[in-house]
Image 1: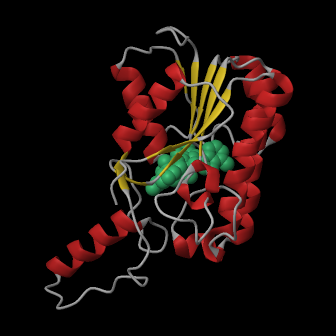
Image 2: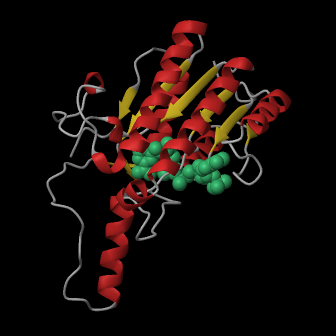
Length: 243
Ligand SMILES: NC(=O)c1ccc[n+]([C@@H]2O[C@H](COP(=O)([O-])OP(=O)(O)OC[C@H]3O[C@@H](n4cnc5c(N)ncnc54)[C@H](OP(=O)(O)O)[C@@H]3O)[C@@H](O)[C@H]2O)c1
């Protein structure tokens, strides 16, 4: 059980998800957080991650570090999204096993599901069909992360769990037009449209995909809840249940 003084490493603490988890942990009185920026600790670097875990020996790990972007970035930097995410996850999850981390929560994304999976998305639909082509590399990396957690539990008994949140929004989001997710991109486009008195705003896509939006503080709450109450092989979807 996580204690207030337990040593907790939040990987990716400056990102939208990591920063929300840090806010929540601090609000709940957890006072022994270990935090590193990517400049201080490049999680793609196996030797650096090994050194960090042997020096710091965190007891609990929230893995919210990832190379993240919207459709355009995912489709353009396909090799980077695959390679960097595989490296980050493999290094953090393996070193968590080697150094006896008591529990780890890996954060993925609902883009892991097949393109034509029925709605609402259920965990059992994983690997039941082809992925969306534009973000296939990212999704493959995230599926590998789920499978790492699952199989370190099966082979070594590690208490590693995974959560797959839906589309998120909230503080520390990225509003870059080429690199952002759907909500920040729409906010920026309409904000600029209003300022510039535009008569129209161009929105990407067909409008057909179903979207479910979750505030990142609610994801942080769910992450803490899972860390405190859930230990199983099956990864868990996190959403509002409303599209
Ligand atoms: N945003 C969404 O709508 C959404 C939805 C579902 C799931 N998720 C998941 O939540 C997780 C975090 O997403 P986010 O939106 O919070 O992303 P984000 O705001 O881009 O933050 C990602 C963080 O990862 C860190 N990072 C990236 N590469 C790194 C490296 N090589 N070494 C160390 N740290 C590195 C960055 O650290 P620095 O700031 O120090 O560079 C950054 O703070 C991802 O797994 C994503 O799939 C996000």
